[in-house]
Length: 72
Image (cartoon, rainbow, N blue to C red; front, side, top):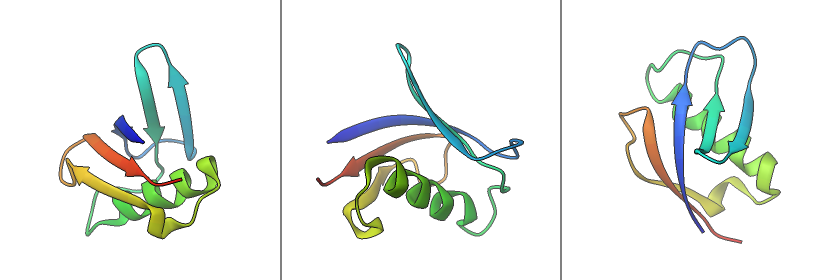
């Protein structure tokens, strides 16, 4: 499954939201040294109940708009 996710960092809590506009991820960490990407993978892993190894950021590793593959 391929997802388009918009990420907001330095949020007050970690959460993933789905809406008509797509998915949004709110992360409490700053986008430094891959911390935000690691937390995004952890949140998606919990959200979809798959191992972290089943999630891969395909495009946008350095941007707030990301394309992510989730293997189920």
